[in-house]
Amino acid sequence: MANVLTTSSGQSARWDVTIALIFLIFTELSNFLIYRRTNNSTSKSAWLEMLNSFKIGFIYGLYLEALKLGS
Picture 1 (cartoon, helix red, strand yellow):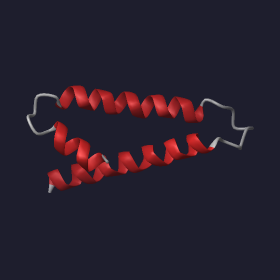
Picture 2 (cartoon, rainbow, N blue to C red; picture 1 turned 90 degrees about the horizontal axis):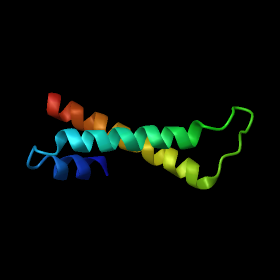
Picture 3 (cartoon, helix red, strand yellow; picture 1 turned 135 degrees about the vertical axis):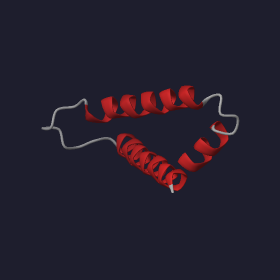
Picture 4 (cartoon, rainbow, N blue to C red; picture 1 turned 90 degrees about the vertical axis):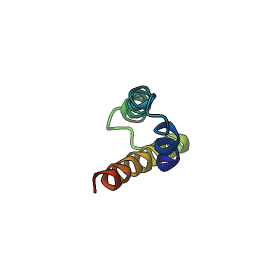
């Protein structure tokens, strides 16, 4: 997903800052939703676990894209 989004948004190089802001808002909003509960509550709903997994994979994909561009 990260590979597709970075490739398609970076095609014209006009939307880079806007897309980066959207990625940042997505990451911070999902962090808020996932970690807003206290640590005493260990049971999370299935959609929060899936959102957390998607977020981690998305950030990892962005990291790999940055490594490819840097080398």
